[in-house]
Image 1 (cartoon, rainbow, N blue to C red):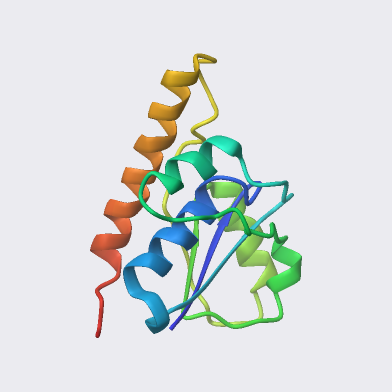
Image 2: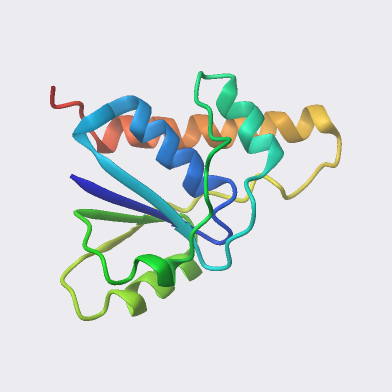
Length: 138
């Protein structure tokens, strides 16, 4: 199974989902993530992923344009604009783009503890959705 996660920057939500699904399903899934305007991985994301035993330090941000010639069994976008961009990029295919509206954890408080709590909440939200949407087949 090939899965693609898309968000705005490929810095927080989509790499979180990539790492969590890879941990959940291992070799049963080929998972990638990308963003509309990718930037380097967010330090808070890296930290909260390490808390659950996932090292995302080697994550290489990708743009949607880098992957639009590939095929996927599932494509999941975390914002409406990412969904619209994916629909345009894959318009000549029958691939459906799902929307999992997940807020940007970077919005809000500048307090480090509160920010980490926001990132943990996003990680938990995504992981719970993955648990409902994907079942380990092995």
